[in-house]
Length: 438
Image (cartoon, rainbow, N blue to C red; front, side, top):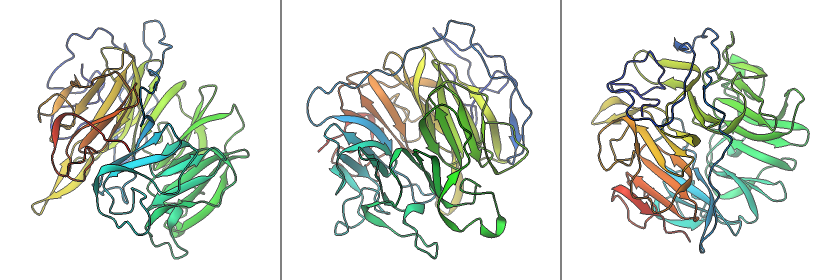
């Protein structure tokens, strides 16, 4: 299977006319798409193209449920939010079935939430975030409890002082917001779904919080109501340099930077929430300027890849899979410094199939694709060594973690920051390792 990967050093979502080093192999289930590429350079607008459709019967299944086999048991899995777009720190958090949250990995900005006296040392041991209980939803280092209160920790727009300087909170801070039903957090912006609609706050560099103003773009704005058109109840929200609001009826609205706006617009940023052509999204994952979603068993990806020149897939483009995809996760390409040189670290993607199998493709320099090698995965590879089917998968630049249907978490790849969660620091693994949950 080839999906969201091209030959060369930088990966991007693929379509039929992309250049590939290898073609799809024995694919038992493929998306048959009719679309034009929407590739543009330097963030420019793309021509409209029809949303790809599959010629098979619609897939109406979803991810396998998590059924706790024993305690401790994780019910959902997220990545921690890096302090900046180009920070390589990496970590994960899980929502446990007792309503608490446990985190492990990088901690330079207090992402692990271990309290003001705990320091900022990285940790290969999963420990509970202090002060959190009755948590209903996680998004990076923000938690929504059953009363609707939003709690956040680490570094981000929710913690900036009046001068706009970043601060580090090692203990979760309760935000001054009305009761919410969902929360989404980006590097610069946070948003919450409330009874009256959507509130967003933070730096307005992408026009998410208010109409874009160059002079005030780096100002930290307090929570503001977003003019989201009336419609069906909001089921989910995802925040990066753009915001995606997913309604119960399948309509998805976006506003903010372009990319990853996922619709044609003459504005960049575009502060007006408007529908994207891709409807019926069942799950979505995004970094600051790249995103992937699943719709009726098909995965779609779009956004910006760092290359020379910068490459943009402005509109959602389907991936090809050996079976229906029910979850998909993405990383972003980025510049990293090695031995004084600046090089591009390619993107990588992973997905969970309807069977619970996990597939990864793209960057594999640390074995994070899960095929037992460190060779770039031009075609998606099935992750070997998971003892049970997976319900979710999440990716950081150098590591992958999967939440299994029995409530256990397994991770593989690099372990410089302790992101494997197995108690061992800086001991990488090409095969999945079980996270020792508290």
